[in-house]
Amino acid sequence: MTNPISSGEWAFSTIAQHDATRAQRLEQAIEYDQIIENLSSTLKKAITAGDYWLGVDRYRGCMRGIVQFRTQPELYDLFFNARTGYRAQFWTSPRRGLEANADCVAKLTAALKDHLPNQFRAREIVCRTDGFTREDEDAGSCAMASESFFESLDSKFSKIWVCERLIQGKPGSLVSLGEVHSGIRLDVRRWRTARAPYPSSEFAWLDLKGGFVGGDQPKSPETRAHDIHYRGWS
Image (cartoon, rainbow, N blue to C red; front, side, top):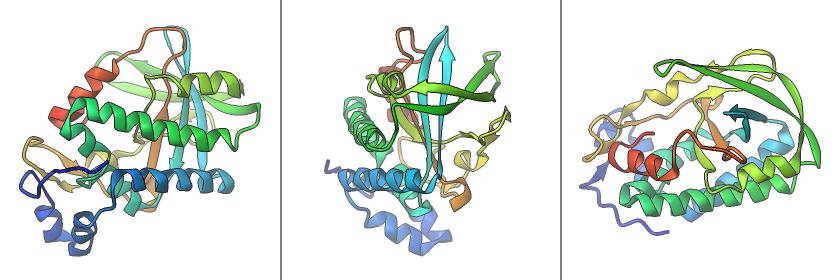
């Protein structure tokens, strides 16, 4: 996917004032397809190294699969902040963003299918919200069949995003990765409050979530796509 965004619409001038090397890397970013190929390779390495988490959560009694994996900060930066990255696809149009998301999810799911056994353990995540605040809690380990897990990930409702709440592999509240909400300003004309998070390796995690199997979804893909297109966030 070649992205025609101009430097007048999407610039790194504020980033350059703080980190010229980073700004230059973003200016020379590889194309989206290569970013996704690199993410797929990173997921495979993370699985081999055990540097990932598998979880499940529920909405109105229906389950979805969750995959969290660590990536390199530089790849995280390209994925989220470059003119050729993930958000840039949604900037171009909501439809293009949905297509780019589907492509990324499919490649990551394929990589996962090559490595997961038919039965495995996952973390059971319970989400509590009052409509204004949200807390995610690890309720312990649960047995999971790969068939059910991949039914969720193969859904059209699946999505990839930066990880905001990290599984720890033990009961208790998930760790909030506050760094993903901060960062230097990203100079995108349409996104007045857009930030360009660039976390350290400790916090550079991505979050792949499937659709809730057999039930309603809390937010439609189209709504999410329009949110990112107009605001840069969802």
